[in-house]
Image (cartoon, rainbow, N blue to C red; front, side):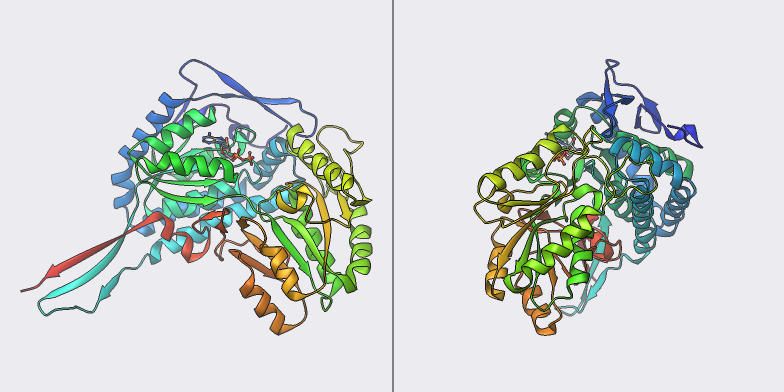
Length: 483
Ligand code: ADP
């Protein structure tokens, strides 16, 4: 991997402004999902190093919190600028460790940087309230203050954006942070720390600890100095971390799994629906928590829609990241490939039909053929489990009520998509869906200016938008006697 700026490739952790090895010298291997080749050996930290990072964040807190929002914004703005200046290197690193096509990685750098810019600005608008007094002789004032030291644990599917979506609001609000990125993709996180340091983020304000997930997580969740945990990942680990946080009553933000329905009504523009389905299902090779997991199609348009979708899916170019025409990269690892294959095998054994794809791709590594399955029913695993891969299963429905009931029949509630040209139906269905986000005639809904997050087993809290900074603030009420 050739980078214009080789200083962005780091294999040590970043604690208190220092690049450091693990106390015992341990390292772990980072591999390329495209061919499983080793690309880096990164310091493997544990509990003791994490505790030092928390101490550093705690020591850095008073000075950072006491800066004006404008001073913090200037530093964050510089971080944003540096991300853009180094966009090509960041995108290459990202594709290298994560596998997504370079075009998608460049998109992620823009998207990731946008959170830093947005929250740098939003930090200046953390307004309080003056409440009309309840009695004479006193005044009631509400101020908002940073929660303190924040722990962030992030996944491998968006190795840059999932970090900036947390670090942007946390730092803008005046919090300091200890980040544990996914072990599959630590290089992007470490490169962000390099740029943060160059942007002037003071020592100890942003720390990156990489290595043993449960040891690092255990310290982050149990240490009293950490006042908040922001986690993006699986529902299973999120639940465990919430339990661990209960001991010290931390605030938590949880962005967890989904099981997104994509509903195509008989009055939908089918070409638009195919375009939306492609984008929401096959982006990042199906490895996003808002990816369509179930395509629900009205009986009357089922055949036409499935033909159009299959034709479009067959055209997707599966290739390694460096191929500028690539639209589908490899899955993150062998386990991910096995999960997709098991959903296909289970569905086929119960009567589903493979309309295209259906197996590992001839490119080898962790590449998988983009797949469409027809005649899928609620009895199949893919109805209730998140596939997290390039598999679009087509279910049938015949009434609006049935579509809503099928869509809501899951413990998850992150994103849902609806295609219809009927304005009344847009509202009815939009309101009836038990999800935190609904795309109506839109397949890509994430943006830094809107609140991203789920309900039910998909999590708590919102990221992005003016709502996103609230998760990093405490409300303080001051009752002032003026006699
Ligand atoms: P995925 O299945 O997408 O990898 P995970 O929930 O397993 O999702 O991982 C998301 C993040 O949580 C990663 O940074 C991972 O290293 C971390 N993680 C996994 N297990 C634990 C744990 N026991 N404690 C803390 N963090 C963990």
